[in-house]
Amino acid sequence: MDYSHDDAGLARQPIGYWSWAAHEATVTHIRSALAEHGLTQPPWWVLNQLDGADEEGRDRAELVTMLSGYLAPAPGAGADGMEEAVESLLERGLVTQDSGARLRATREGQALRDKAYARVMRASAEIHEGIPEAEFVAALKVLQRMIHNVGGKAWHH
Image 1 (cartoon, rainbow, N blue to C red):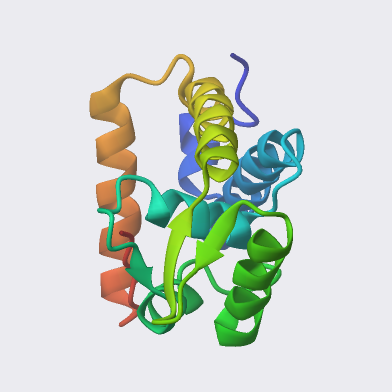
Image 2 (cartoon, rainbow, N blue to C red):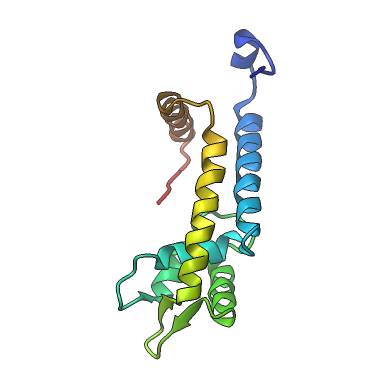
């Protein structure tokens, strides 16, 4: 791979630009993979959280609250966006809700989740291609340290 600058030039590059560019490129790649299966991120997050849920399902309000801040400011993020995601899955017959507001994936919803998951894993492998795990971990540690240095907060599930 050819880099934009030599090492000395890269050391002077603005982290804000490169972290933004990495975010834009990788999130766009993942969203494109999901779109192949008719999904956007919020419904995908719901289906993914319902995967492996016991027969009791998941409480809708708890799930919406937990996912509301998942990857803000993604399109459809926030409680209203997550409620819309749940409603869209219910309308498509991919999720059911019982009288106790517990959500469960239908057979069709689980099948779609499984297909989309396989595609997302391929997209993730494409993103990570040629990057040794140790380098990836080092990059994340650097980014987390920068976030910490400026008093920011970062979390992921």
